[in-house]
Image (cartoon, rainbow, N blue to C red):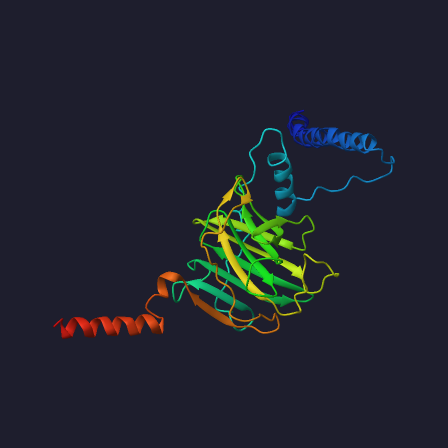
Length: 287
């Protein structure tokens, strides 16, 4: 009797293991049923297997992005700082891979010259870069002579909304008339540090048109800039804007500097001769 009692006391251990197994099986059952419910809700066949959950970092990031960035509650991811849409004009390429005109102080560049222009061929187009010390507009004109009138003009105009727009004009005498047909494309512009700067392309060859010249021909380049009122150009800043000394060919790259009026005074041979004569007169004294 004592031995049977000891044997009876050992029975609960196996029973406990069986109960634990049964409990584990019943705990897994709702998840299986839930998986089956998801398949039916998705319109799948009863025999389809549920796709295993991908616990990779990519899945985690995607789910986190969906929950946080796209949710109505906000909490967006930190975004990368905006990239400057306008690449600065490089002057070290002048005379090598592009032609340049600089007007202003000796040694000036695209950010310090009173006026700057560059041009280079890109396939069937010519890319122009313009910059001037103004809050209004900067332009280049293509002329058969050195005078204003009958000229094809491309201008970059700073409007009241802070944008810089590329516009096409035709000089009728001393008046610039805007032309709706604009050959410019890939247009960029920026107004910074009281300067209007822009970049655009226009085709080398164009259909015969009075107001649009073929750039494969050589032209005098007229350089001008000035103020704008409500996005409309007004008279240029100086009475006699600079002009290229000779016709310009887009197939020849040069780096040409033109001193502004403030730096021309003492460079003229006549002015130097006058200074020498005045100095000699002062040293000799009057009789």
